[in-house]
Image 1: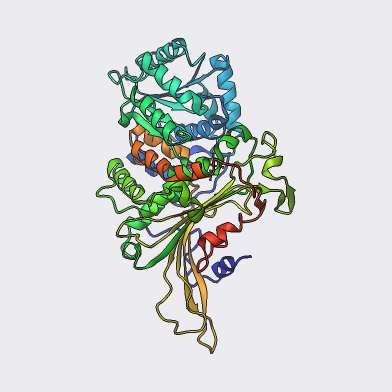
Image 2: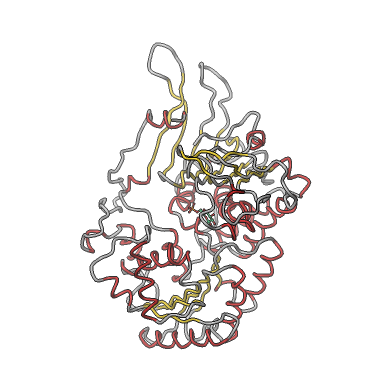
Length: 540
Ligand code: BG6
């Protein structure tokens, strides 16, 4: 048990757990069950979403519909939204792949995927069969027009059932090498044209593999689509607790006055994973931790923490602020990298009491691979709010546990009046698991002596009593509604690549010290030096 765990148990003012918050808005807590009738199992948040958000009739066209992402995440998310009535009455899905399949076989594939995915909501009686009726499938070679013309015909078919509207959302859930050919193919047959209904495209990550390729991809997309039609997905932005960061910052009066260099000592952003490669060596060997996590997910958490309050809560106002803060990050040319960043790769080790192989022993990994599975970086933000306040970002695979957190660490009190009372207060946003927010501060320990001890005030998201929405559900629905707030804009992606480019250049050479952390530990020792000597990574 860590010090944090111990003090969490001794919370000074614990908020009630699993009780109804006094908002007047939140329906009562419900228990999840696969057998209860619809009205008993409905996610109460979805009920709230439905009241406010109903997309027009539309067709979702998924390229790569039989792939891993579609099977594990997308299809369960779409099914959940549809089952809860959030997609409206007129909705169809066209799966597109290179594999030859009939509509019936695709239907079987989807039903099987839904029944086996951990992400699938409670399945209500009869709903799988009804969902199956919405599914069409097309296959073909993505470099030829024929497959796109057949998608066109499917949109015409769905359009008849959609009151003549031919709205379509194209989801590119394919290897990145196919993003450009598919986008261009859609454009060639006129599928980006919005005269018969809106047309939007969702592009999965990774968005490019460096600054130059991201710019090429943006340019290729823009030859076909207007920026307002492009939705670059980063699933971290769909996480409920990531959105809560904005809610807490800008929906309360007590935090914002402290959110600056006068009170904040530093910020730590951690995305730790206990998993290793999960059979993705082919992709990961090329990507590594910088491209896989830092350039996108961590950079998004950073911008939401550091940005200025937006003028309005709309897509462009928020994204303008995110870009402004990215532009204020002090550049990291390759020669500065040794001073501000650390790379790591796990060797064999022990995790949850089991021996696990090192990265280089994983199937599909080159024996002398220099791909980083860990990265820590110090970002400095040259603006008025954050001058002198470092942001430390770290992420790694095969760390001791899965935990994602943003911790705002405040300055020490100016004067030590009591024994043990000079600790830094910490406001921590736990993104996952145990979603919530905690505030660590010093309190008098019971007894005759005036001795201080750190305690934690803890708000847990499960107090709302509702299961959290899957990020993909949230983001898919937003894209159907034309709300791009939670999708990175072209300039955001560009600036995020600019920031990490120096790391990629500096680390383009072999890493003689790899592997430099055993699986099941918190990363290389050099990461402690990076944050030290007067600061240390939080023990999570
Ligand atoms: C993906 C990365 O984008 O995010 C994976 O490609 C990583 O390597 C995953 O494991 C982490 O997402 P989450 O939601 O499980 O934290």
